Every structure is written in C-alpha cells, then in structure tokens.
Image 1 (cartoon, rainbow, N blue to C red):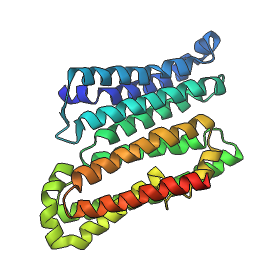
Image 2: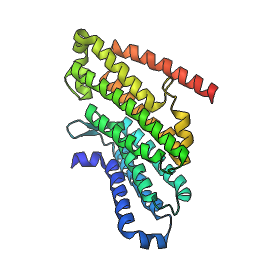
Image 3: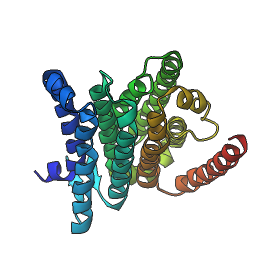
Length: 293
C-alpha cells in the first residue's frame, strides 16, 4: 500500500481517464443533454486530484521508494508532478471551449491524462525500464493528440512527430541497453555504484551510452541541434496541444535528463564531461531560439 500511496497522483489521472472513457461509452446521450463540456469538467478531476495528493505529500514531508526502488518520491519528483498537473489542468481548460460538442473529446482528455501520468512517472523514475515505459506512455498519447483534429496539417504533423519520436525512442533504448551492458543493472542507484568500475573496463561503451541518451532526450527537449521537428509539429497540432508540448513534455524531458545524468551518470570524471556538454547545448538553444524565433 505504501507504493500505491507514493504513486497516487499518477493513479488518479489514469483512473479519471478510464472513468471518462466509460462514461462516454455508456452515458453520452444523457450527459450530452446536460452539458456539452462535461468531459472537460470530469477530466479536471485528474489534475486537481493529482495536485491535492502531491501537495499532501509535500506538506507531510513524505519521501520514499515504490516498487523495489523503481520510483522515488523526493523534492524533484514533487516539483515536476505539481508542474505537470498544472500544465494538464491548464490545457484542459484551454480545450474546453474549442472541443465543446466534439464527438471524440472524451478520448482527447483521456489521452491527455494518460500522457500526464506518464510524465509524472518520468519525474520520479529510478529504473531504466520504468523510465522507458513511462516515456512511451506519454509519447504514444502525444502522437495521437497532435493529429487529433485529422486535418491536413495535423496529419502531417502527427506523422512527422511519430517518425521523430520513434527515432528518439530507439536512440534512448540503445543507450539504455549499452548502459545496462556496461554496468549489469537497470537501477540508477546501481548504475552509479557500478560506474567507476565500468569506466575502467568499458569506458567507450559508457561514453557511447551517455551520448545516445543525451541525443535521444535532446529530441524530446528540442535542444539544438535536435529541434528541427518543432516548427512543423507545433504549427499542425491543436493550439492547446502545442502549449502542452512546449511546457509539460519539455518538463518531462528535463526530469529524465536530471535523473539519468544526475543520479545514474553523476560520477566524475564523466559528470564533468556531460555537464560541460549540457552547458554548451543550453547556451546554443537559448541563443539560436531567440535569434530564429
């Protein structure tokens, strides 16, 4: 039960998404007659419940590990969980008017909640497998959301996003596989402990793993020079989805990067090398982003 309590915010969003789909399937006629925006009103229970649960954890000073260390609740996880819940709630409110009366709006909000749940897991993931599953949960939901309106621009943006997402996921998976091969564990804490020995025996493999992980997450965060997909996808996606991708999706990418490189790969001298690389990429992204905007 302790593990369930720690991942409560994610379960709330997934549960509300499931209830939303069931209500849409079996009670649409009555609910549509009552209020065309009922899916948005029901969907709001997800981020509100997640925020309340996370705030209760923060006020109580609750910290701990869930599912044999695969997920951890700490200050970083709480911060990103609150940020993601706020972003999901804001997008639901922004979508309420635009999608009022749309016959597929329940699916839209369910996908949004599923993506938010995946991003919340990313914020506290402490295991490579957990991070990969959460990354795919949020990515698959976002692929559908981008092309949700089924117009020409949205379909084109969705296809491009699927291709880029598949490539970045493959790169991340390859990096994780190399890291597992070098250290013999998928736990970030275990990787940190085994890393000094792995650097002595298999330094090229570890460096390649770090490069692949950085490149794959760079696509997710739209860091220079991996930002080519952003204009087309943002232009073709529904406006609320674009806002969601620019805030929550990026926050999830940063959370994963902090976990992987701060916990798993945060051992000198490797930490000095990737921290310098991230500083350069950050400067380039901020400079080119402002110049080319």
